[in-house]
Image (cartoon, rainbow, N blue to C red; front, side, top):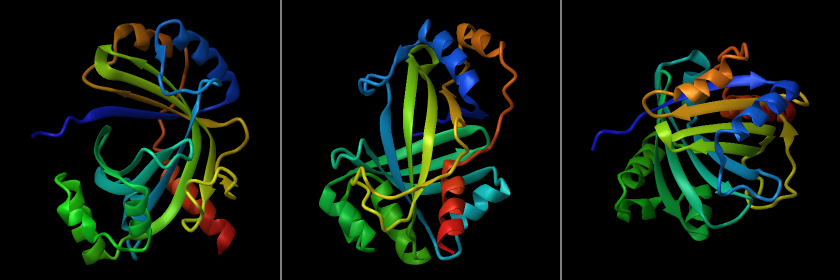
Length: 232
């Protein structure tokens, strides 16, 4: 089956633009159903890389075609847990997902991934082979609060990711009190716009009121840099 690549646009914005843009989006888009009472949910992702830091270096060099592996959880809960591979091709993204149990996640962190050979999803054997061939290991935990808005037309998903926090890979992914380090200045956040095909005109018109400049800002690289800076 041909992967369904989606557009992904990123912007770094401040608090003032966030307040105005959020008000405009709320008038047209629905809020993500997974949001809590404050309109947000917490995301933590444990990223993997090899001994040569290939995923980091490819992103920093701006390679058009690349991928990276991560395990993602929400609100520090042990269900669901997902192993993901995010593929990037220019401005397009595609993601493969494989569900994990808490025990399987613990095994991955110990470098034990043989169980993946028995999973029906292609991502399982693929990750196993790369772990063995490239000595892939956990490298950084990326944590942030996400406020998301969605529109079925064009499968639009617009997110504000704030309070970006870098954590060492040995930290407990499920501990809400785990120590971390701020990776962006106060008030700054990452705006992401994802959609399939064309962005609806009604949403394009909202963004015309702003002079946002696209960025290649990577939460993975920002947090990897922050952890290396603190722990060196």
